[in-house]
Every structure is written in structure tokens, then in C-alpha cells.
Image (cartoon, rainbow, N blue to C red; front, side, top):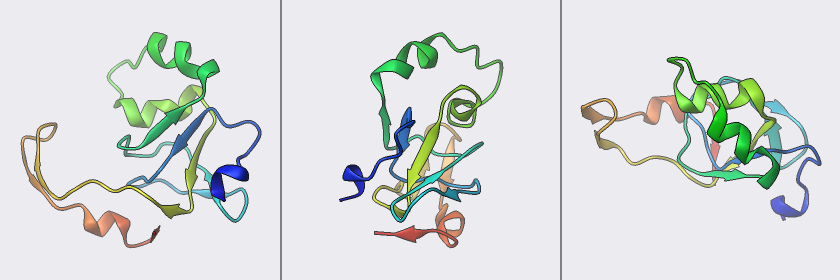
Length: 105
């Protein structure tokens, strides 16, 4: 049902995030800027060249996406990351506290 009610201008859809302040668009989707979390991403074909060619200039990939693309996150998250060892951070992590303000499916 959510995918039948997409914002017309979407370029990137997210299945869940950590951090950021979503701005409601409709019952199913919220626009999002400066978010953390690229574990469930759908790219619209038209934005893919921007993603590949963007100069991330020491900014994390996920946080940079909304600098140049219209990003929306589903209001009831359908994907979260597992707690455990993070290759990116080099240690065991538990980020559940970042999800407390969001609704999980």
C-alpha cells in the first residue's frame, strides 16, 4: 500500500534510518535530510548518476545523499540494522536507542 502512495518527486526511498528529523509527507512517507542509515535504499533510475558522481568530500555516504537528492523514509520502518560487530566502526554496537522515536513495522 505504501508503494502505491509514493511522493511523485522521490529520488531515493529508505526503509529505515537512524537519526534525522522526518517531515511527514503523507500517511506512509516522510521527507528526510541529513540522516544516518543506508541499509535499505531504493534509487530512482534518474538519480543514480548523481549518486555515483557526487563528491562526498569526507562526508558519510548516507548523510550526503539528501544534499543532492529528494529522500523519503517509510513511516513504519521495514528495515533496521542488527546489533553486533560493526566493520565500519570497528567495534560491537547496539543502536537501539536511536530507534526509540521511530515506529517499527
